[in-house]
Length: 326
Image: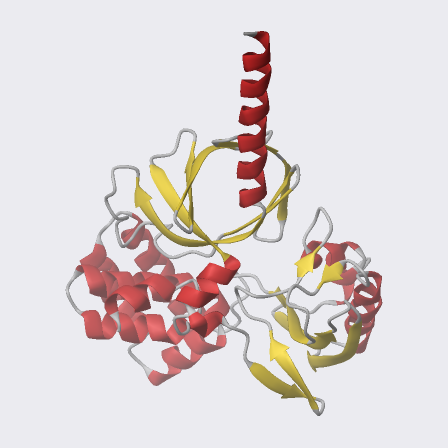
């Protein structure tokens, strides 16, 4: 009897370890339903989002920015702040978080790319070199307990003192197959002092930014130092007020009332230019406008609104475009 118990414990341990090994890797969220199988409402905040789980031994990394120490059992993922039940079924990792009424369906990155080849990195030419372009799904992993963005900011001392309001910065660089950072280009500069701080901080990321595809990759990084209150002209403030009032109606599910205000915000060429200039601020409002059109049965205008944000590789509008605009 004792030997049978030992064998049983060994088999349970073996199964648990096999499950944990099967969990390891990068998982991309494919869909969400309620636990009863019903789809999410189209105005649900989670209707279209990007979510990545990177599972390592004793570690869970969410969206390459939130890090948890984790324990993995045969059917649970346990962290100090998050507890989930899971099962592996076919190619899918199905997660249900404790206290949540939704089920999340994840695919391993390689399976996700096979299902959605639009995310297979495309070749680009940069400084005469042929590289693979990072995208929302395939991008470097920053091997620290903070994100690359947070790391850079932490090493750019007193950067706020040299940043004008409503500033935008973008840089590109090559991350080689062996994780070297080379060929940095400042695409959109704020000023020489800020640019210099960025370059010094990026050097400190050497060895921490990990190429996940084994081929030289073109990477971009940007900073947006913008505040919604920083509208200079009276015309800009009027547009912002219209959008804000429309958003308030949308939050209460008053879709018709919200749409009237969204359309008024877009009614003149001058207003449209203001919205384009401040698209970073207004992107959520534009998406809400598209949802209003969907709710009210105007799919054509809904798709036009979502198209202002991006194509189906943009996770802010991806599921709307896939489900209503094919």
